[in-house]
Image 1 (cartoon, rainbow, N blue to C red):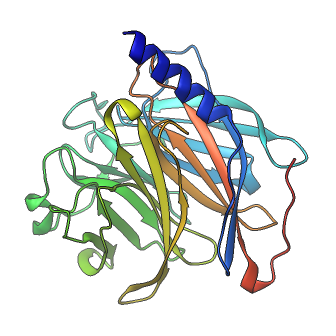
Image 2 (cartoon, one colour; image 1 turned 60 degrees about the horizontal axis):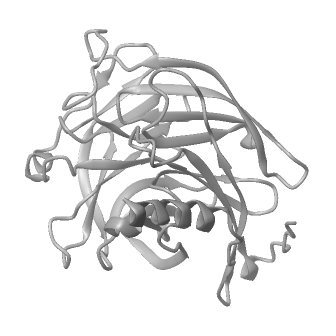
Length: 309
C-alpha cells in the first residue's frame, strides 16, 4: 500500500510538471495546458470521447457508460483552459427510444459530430455505430459489416472520426496481433468497406481518432504499464481515397505523466492545430479526469511559432 501511495503521488507530480516540446525538422508540438475537471454530479467520469467546437469554446464528451455531457469552456489570453461549465447531460437511447444501461449494450467509446449536427457513437460490447439527431433522440443503427463479428470481445470499435462530407472512419482497440495492422473501416453511401490499415507499432492500442482541419487522420493510442500507469501516443497520417500515408509520431508521453487519455479532438486554434485529449478515470478515486492540450505547428508550412508562458 505504501508503494502504491508513492506511485499515486509521483503520478500527480509528473502530471503537474513541465512538458518537453517535441520537435522535428517539419513539426513542433507544444504543451498548452492541462486542466483537471471535477464535478460532483452522478455519472460524471469515464470519458472516452470528446468534440471541441466554436473555436475551442464549446465541447461535448462521451462517457463509456452511455451518456453525453456538453457545455462551454473558458480560456485565458494564451488559450489555456481556465474553467468548464456543464450545460446539460443525457442518457443515450437505443433505436426504440429506451435508455441504454451501462454494460454490453451501453459500452459507448467513440464520438464524432457530423457537418449536419448528427452525433455518431461507436460501441465496443455490442459492436455497432449509431447516429442521433439530438443527444436524447432514438438511435439510428447503421448496418453491420460481417468483419465486425471477428473482433475481440471488449476490444472492438474504440475510435471514431468523420470527414467533412459525412464519411465515417472507425478503428478497433486491438488489431488481433502485435504484428497485425489496425483495420480502418469506412462508412459511406450506405455501406462499409475496408480501404486501408494502420501499422501497429509496439504494444500500443487505438483509443481515439479524429480528422483534423488539415484533412489528416489523427490516432490517439494508449499503453497500460501496470503500476506505472498509462502513457499516450499520437500519430497522424495523410488521408487519401485508398491509403493512409506519411506517418508521423507527434507525441509520446511518459508513464504517469497524464492519466488514461482516451478521447481526442483536433481543431484549429488560429495559431496551429490544437490537440485536446480527455482522460477516462474509470470512476476510480485513484484516477482523475483531465483535459490535456497541445499545439501542433507545421514549420514547413510557415505557421508562426506560438510562445506559451
